[in-house]
Length: 400
Image (cartoon, rainbow, N blue to C red; front, side, top):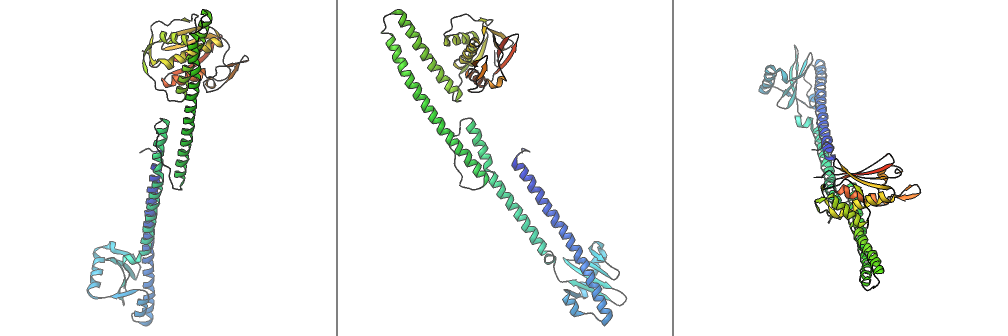
């Protein structure tokens, strides 16, 4: 069992409390037994005092003290048992002994005139009745509280599984509790939050789908109308514009899926140079980029990894110059001359983080999207600056 678990700690606490209760009960039992022996010996002194004064056994006093005189065969058995088993002697004074026989206590008074065996009429159960009731009641109460607490905490396990399923996007059904304890309140609060987030997510998805549909319709119509233009230069320019818009809409749809964690990676073996060419096409980039990439390959989702390359190239060219893409030792670095980033790099890979670099806003969502896609691929994005150059490095853990 997990030693940090609440259930483990509850079990330990219950065991300690139960053992402490039993030890306390046993201690009280020993204390009561000693007190009864002392009381019985004290009663013997009173009886002997009364006998010396009256020279006869005080029967009325014996009844008041709850003692009964024993003679005959029973007396012989008790005394014989005591003689054969010294452990049966509970206490002793100069003139009296307390004996135990078949669950009863006996007081044996003996001197040159007296030979008297007195029996305590109470049984063992009667002597310890109150203690047994208190001990039994405490144990039952302790066990009942343990069971109630454990029953109250059991929903925590179900809540943990639902939280894990929610994180994996698999939580589709949940039931609110009508109980009033704190665990149920926390569970209901979580389910209410899940319900609100789900409604917001559904609303966002519907809005984005409608937005893409409304934007895609005029772009498609524009491309159709472009075919009706007769002047070649204008036709070529309009075709490039509407193709760029269509490409941007497609890319935005992919980005929306990636950032909403609804994107399923289609990993396969791809050439890095093909990813670089696809990124240049997305940027409508014609100029040559210095690189030492030849036929190196990696396992990745082609569409989303192309966006990573595209964003890193776009950032490097916007905020730097003389871009180089260098592959070495299972890493791919995008290196450009320019000013260093202001502040910690972790701030630049946050969504909608905007840093000022020489009076220019920098790196918007580009690095955030690149970092998110790389994390989905179990890869990392690192940054360093030296000799006037920014270096953004991708670690390919699954490179072939």
